[in-house]
Image 1 (cartoon, one colour):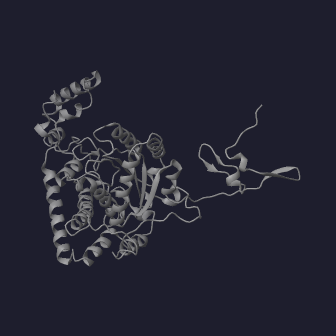
Image 2 (image 1 turned 135 degrees about the vertical axis):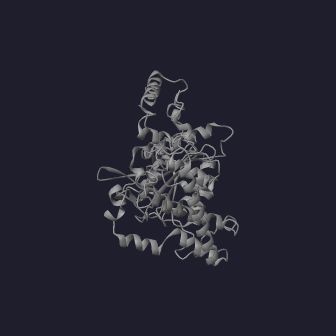
Image 3 (image 1 turned 180 degrees about the horizontal axis):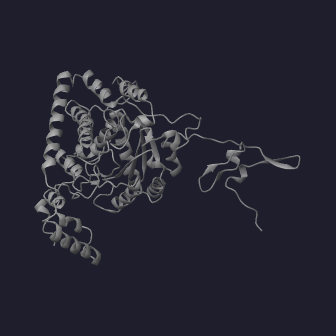
Amino acid sequence: MHPLSFRHSSLLTRACSNGRTLSTLAASTSLGCLPPAHSPAVSKLAFFNSVTGDSSKIPSYRVLDVFGVPIEGAKVPEVSIAPFASPKKYEHMQLLPTLDDILCSGQRQGRIPFYSLTSYLKYGEEATVIGTAAALADDDEVLSQYRETGVLLWRGFTLDGIMAQVFGNHEDSGKGRQIAVHYGSKQHHFHTISSPLATQISQAAGVGFALKRDPARRSKNVACAFFGEGAASEGDFHAGMLLAATLPSPTLFLARNNGFAISTPNSQQFYGDGISARGPGYGVDTVRVDGNDVLAVMNAVKEARRRCLEGGRAVLVEMMTYRIGHHSTSDDSYVYRERQEVEDRTKNDNPITRFRLFMESRGWWNETDEDELAFRLRRDVIKAFKRAETVKKPDLKDMFTDVYAEEPWNIKEQREELIALLKKYGQVWEPWQNELRTLKNGGKPVD
């Protein structure tokens, strides 16, 4: 049997002490690295619980302080936030709580069945969403959760399109089949939202892999998965991260850490330093950013996107913010958190006020601009809301289409049963008559 040979073995000298053979060099150099991680071997037993190496928390990148003043050493993206661009970002940040206000009121009045807040009712995640939208290419593929309406609006999706989906009328591209706030637009590269939590994360990894295989889009576009820190507790998060890191694909994982997964606070979601600590475990470049700072978010996502494209593999961005409003119209957050806590966060650090103060300091915004914007946004949203109320629901026949290339026997059977019921009750039973009048073409024909 031949003795084992080591690289640089000639450099290793040994001495005997009490019958034991000891290395005279530091363990990390004498013992080399252990496969497959290339981890240096050491002789000192040490546990660790931090990816920073010194047991400190992972830092959060920031450009503006809570008063809208650039902090020392911060890179202010001057070209991207010049006077002609900044008001656009601010307008879209203000549009989100305006939408929330009017649509939540509409739900309470019984005019729409459900609404899930897009920005958490003034002030919450406006900087997170709009800062990301501004950093992405308009044809990057977005797989959203429920809070990224701002990405669609930034890309040109109209208020009429928003209202059509919320009301489920015949102008809705989904033909009224989805629950409210489950938007989708092929034109705007925004994949239709799914209700099950976290499914979009692993799907995004697949989309990213498809982009990498497409010669026309390789090194040009990324897939973006938005999700909350609660969704990161699902198995889909780990499946998506593992896939995009191991079968490398340009997939951008965007975690909105707002403190709560519906009624479950972070302290009951995980025991650790947020979501960022998980990235290095998958070999993924990771950054944590102040999610209430629209300029910091824009800088971080822009750089993350660049790394995605150049490296052809996943990048994780954790955006730290706070959920000011209720989770949805079905939630009362004051049951599980103190009202004072919410009020303090609203007053002391909100993304809209922070960016407004920054623009005012540059002479790009004033009180008159603010009043005009508030009036115009509210007017436009109410106008779209009232219009959508008058638009007919989809054709009754649409419930049987767009699923199968060839209609299977069971769908055909159900359609024929509905036709028979309409002939029997549609002209004589008042509840059915009233419902049919709300449908395009009066609910007929269905054959």
